[in-house]
Length: 213
Ligand SMILES: Cc1cc2nc3c(=O)[nH]c(=O)nc-3n(C[C@H](O)[C@H](O)[C@H](O)COP(=O)(O)O)c2cc1C
Image (cartoon, rainbow, N blue to C red; front, side):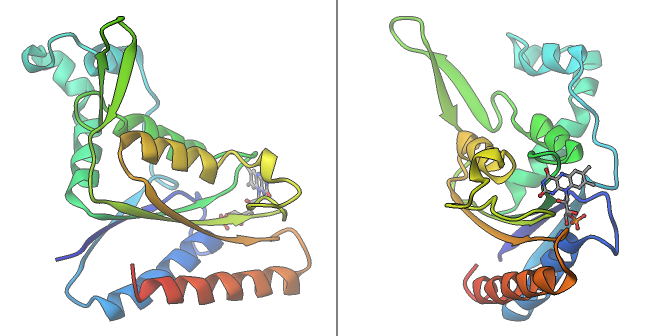
């Protein structure tokens, strides 16, 4: 059975275009996969804690098997989020572009799921240099994103200023999710008709992908 995890990263509810496009994609995808399981994780309208000193100490503890109970508690939410990610083979991330990067709730989620010994590992080569290993396998991801301006996509005038979906690609690749697609609707701050056309085109692409995702 296919299992899809949907991360909603916009703080906006009904006004959010990335949320609406992702839900439209989901509807089409579920029609094509009626037996599939979908889990939604809210990181835009729900609080995901930032990394704390206690979290770092627990995450990078030299003896993770012998972690004191009190330190285990510092990883509780992270354990839950990592378990949720591991359990699903398909990942959809719906997010706005915020100040040229990912919204802070999504960044907080990233910091919780990049977990030593669970989603990546570090060893040392014979010279003592760190070697990084991705631990996730067989997953693929779809990023659905909306932007106020235009030209942030591949080949666009402002591509170099976009640190949102490129950052996500890097992070997902680091933990082993290399199959990543991006569908964007740009121009929310342009004339209404411009953005309506962009959303319609994004929706067309999403429905196309829904048949084979
Ligand atoms: C705090 C904030 C920062 C933003 N930063 C950018 C930006 O750097 N570039 C851009 O093109 N649009 C930016 N926007 C516009 C959003 O990307 C746009 O409104 C998008 O549609 C929001 O996604 P949503 O509709 O899913 O909430 C920003 C909006 C907000 C509220």
